[in-house]
Length: 314
Figure (cartoon, rainbow, N blue to C red):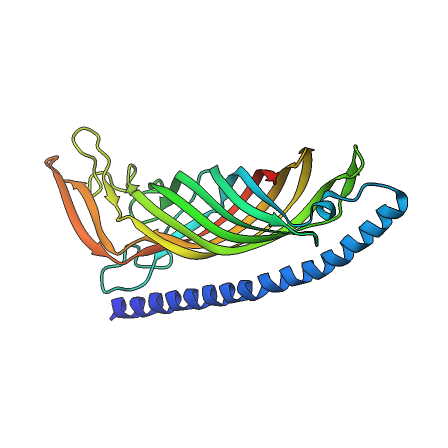
């Protein structure tokens, strides 16, 4: 009876999470085109004002007005710092749950790493830039700690995470301030994007080097081998949105250096339904390996990053 009640609670939690994610994605879908429209209208007014003012003072017009619709290509990388998160039990598929309680989980974070970007786009006279971003991050290193009962305070976990993103994005370049020579300017910008993130989680292992009772089921092997549990891998695609703010610095000719901060919500990552491999050691030192089918597990994936891009206009 207790297992049925726990299962109902987890299914309810999973449904609530899905509803919250659905509402969040719908809100972003509505917000993004409205933001682009507002910035476009505002940008046309600002562009006209700037052109009139600079014509009156005899200064060269900004490049964005002189060039019109200018296609460009951006290349760059960012230092990503995913937020701390927790792996919980996911949806109920009729198998055993790994954690069995909302008070049991694996908490940790992906280590800081680099993500690489390629983004073709177009700069409009209104001050808007529209681009399609593709980014790739490989061999991100997840490190965490589980809190199973009687398994010790130190229960290290580790996994590998690979991700990619496809993200249509829009940016608005503010008028900014002038540099020498006349006609060139540093421009702050704001941006938003809505797209998709694909991920693959692999090599997920939880180890138990310091159990409460080293002579019981979590005893070490005869050569000091640490008992562990290996989880199934996972993969999927999630709706993703991002917000960004930065500054564009002209560095010569039609090249700009774009420096920005980003916040990205990439949905959830997790393990798929499959068998865990439980490795333990008997009193006589022999190895025991047990395979048990379990439901999926999942964790939120949120990222803060500092992005550096080189933008080449044609």
